[in-house]
Amino acid sequence: MRWLGQRESSNVDDRRGISGGGLLAGGGIIGVIVLLINFFMGGGDVSQLPQVIQNGGSTQQLSPEEKAAEDERAKFVKVVLADTEDVWSKIFSERGKQYIEPTLVLFNGVVQSGCGGASAATGPFYCPTDQKLYIDLSFYEELSRRFNAPGDFAMAYVVAHEVGHHVQTLMGVSQKMARLRQQVSETEYNRYSVMLELQADFYAGVWAHHDQKMHNILQEGDIEEALNAASAIGDDRLQRESQGTVVPESFTHGTSAQRMYWFKKGFETGDIDQGNTFGSSDL
Image (cartoon, rainbow, N blue to C red; front, side, top):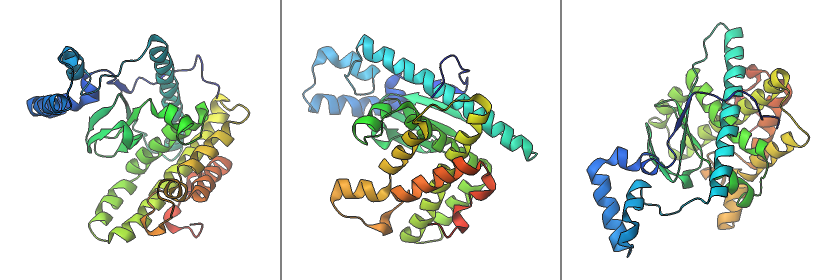
């Protein structure tokens, strides 16, 4: 992806290295007490205690090379976010609406969001309550190592997918989903959750379509990187790799084939009106 030298979004809350991304800030003195109990019960070294408190329980330190690589990734996701702002502002404006830009929160390890606490293990996520995206930049490496989905555009797809959830919030879809959760069974809600996630994949494709026209971002292999990432995090593939069996009733994000299909459809059409996954037979 061509991104060096491009505009970086200013809608970024960088919490890396600040109280574990917000764990202690959100938990106050109780959070400190719990952290200390866990530290001493685990046989922690007292000399490391100040660093543990600062990092919210993690003693891992980045080498200068690792810190430089992470800072580079931070710049990258800021550029991707800026591009999503350009694209979605244009799309909304053409429909007589205003695009309200979300905030991207960068964190290490753990974080407090409007939707509750989360950790790096959660993966990147969007919280409709505070309209913020949350990303631990270590996920960039996890995409490559754990999911075998390397490449900068694989990460760009992930960011664009979470922005897609923000678009759904602005369009009222997320609010409808929240109401549905109280009205249907878990299995039925999972079906709707799949539709929600596939629509976010579609919106990621729409972003790539328009960003290419606006900024000429794509390089050879970029779309393949995004499709590979979409395939790698399909429910069927993840379940097969983790438990050896596939349980469709428990799917919440869609199969690898579905995720690839909807991203590709968004990229090829660039038309948000063709992204009604809730009323589509292509599921």
